[in-house]
Image (cartoon, rainbow, N blue to C red):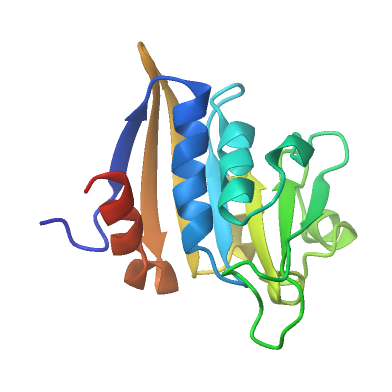
Length: 175
C-alpha cells in the first residue's frame, strides 16, 4: 500500500479522462487549498482545471486559460463541499504564473507572501507554479502533467495538509 507521501501517477488517454482526474481532486478540495500545476505547453493544465471546477460544482465551460489576464476568478455555489468555514462563498482562483517573475509581479495580482490573504475562502489553481518560487505555500498539491505517446501522465504529490487527504483521491481514482 502506498503511503501519503508517495506520488500518485495516473495515465489518461483523452481530454475527458484528464478532466475526470481534475474532478476527483476538486471534490476533495477545501477553502485555502493550492493546486500547483506544472507541464509544458499543451500538456493539459487548463483541461485539468476544468475538471477541478466541475469537482467544485462550477460550470467548467467558464474556465479558460488565464494566460492573457494572468488571473481568472470563478464563484463556487454556496452548497459546495469547499465552502469556507465562516459561511462565506468559496471561489476558484486560476492563476497563470508564466509571466510572474518577482514579488512585485505577484503583488500586482494580489499574491502577497505565500498568498494567504488571496487563498482565504478560495481554492487556488496555479499553472506554471514553480515560477512562484518561495511564494508557494508548503500546504499544496503538486501536479505534473506530461505528454505520453498514448496520452498524458498526471503525477500528484501531496504536500502539507494535502497528505491527510490524498488517500481519498487514491481510493477514488484507483479503487
